[in-house]
Image (cartoon, rainbow, N blue to C red):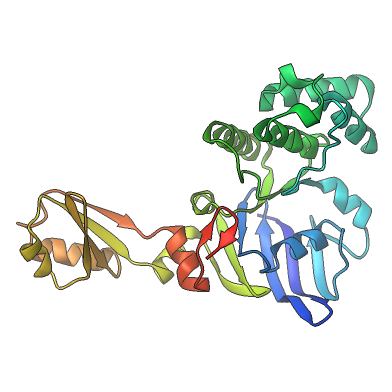
Length: 304
């Protein structure tokens, strides 16, 4: 599997602020790659460098095998970017916004009309084409942002907080479209998000803290390293749960018992079969991983 993005020893300062510190990672072809961190961790700086919007101090950036320093213009054609804040012209209609953007990639006439129709069906905005962007809802505008990024059929789609503030229906639509693109076009997706359930579906996760990598791996690897498992026991008496010798808490009509891993859970179940008549075992969540790694909680774009 090819590396679509390769970052080696990336550094960036803003005066005395060391925004990115010796950052190295790679993104494989077709991956959903989650790039996590609180505001100020270095995510946006890294994305802006990848997109050619910001000069690095040192290090190496390769996109689809091409060095960013050697051919930044060709690299931009391989990228589709959905920024956290919409860059659409509010005074223009949806169609005019997309047509002017397509022209920058040499997409005109029948080719543009065909691509527009394809994206409008895919993202469900066929009835919005003649509406000014300024009159769209947040969810509608986000769909157009994504269409704008997909006009030239990029190999890599960069999504910077794509679902922040969106209603569940629009979030589900966007993730369904992204899943289709990955499956049908083998598109690589580079995601930043404050919704940990989205990161849990990633193929690989990098967590930034103060400009450097604090942890990385698959979601399962990170959960195993930074969180334990939980056994939820139903219909049990607290006195019996206490005898397990493990930390627990009462949750409504059940008890939630914390164990280091699945092996420890299995050992308890085999030792006390009479207690485990109605139970379920769950892994820790990516929220727990993020808290363990950074000491912070991500909630809707803010760190606590």
